[in-house]
Image (cartoon, rainbow, N blue to C red; front, side, top):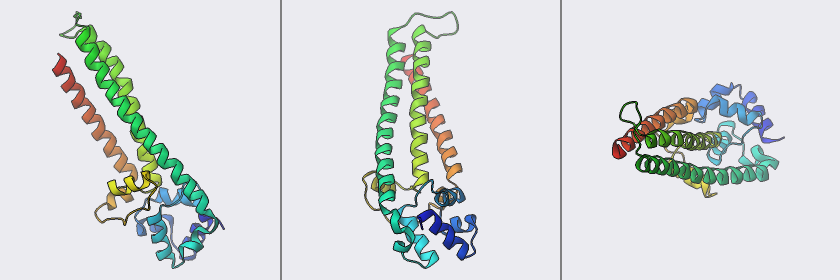
Length: 204
């Protein structure tokens, strides 16, 4: 049996619903659903919790899926590193273009105190900032798929190392991954707005 079938088998064997299993091992119901539909694989910490909950060995759970899991984690860790680099590059380009255009093109517009450089800089800044946020959201999606919450977990995953023991105090992020991502998006948008305003005041 493959891992997806094993999880479904032992969950039903223990009389658990998906949401009950998710709560017991500190993940979202959607994460459990993804496991059982063979869309994603549990991380090492989740496998340990599953084996303890089902009272079966990890070997019994994963059976022939070890190679597939390792390959999936390696591919996603490389993708996370690439996306992180792209996000930083897009942010740096956004700021550089905004400041450069605003400083170099000082021809005034007839509306307000804006210059043509301010408008051109904003036009270039917004799509680049949007691309950076798209990269950030993609990273968050990978983190959710592998149940990564803390900085130590993310760094271990990115370096292909075993996951550290899950610390206490991150239950909300693990149990409500969608809400956690939404909070981060709103926070990032607010930070972007503040940075944009600061840059405008700096070159204005």
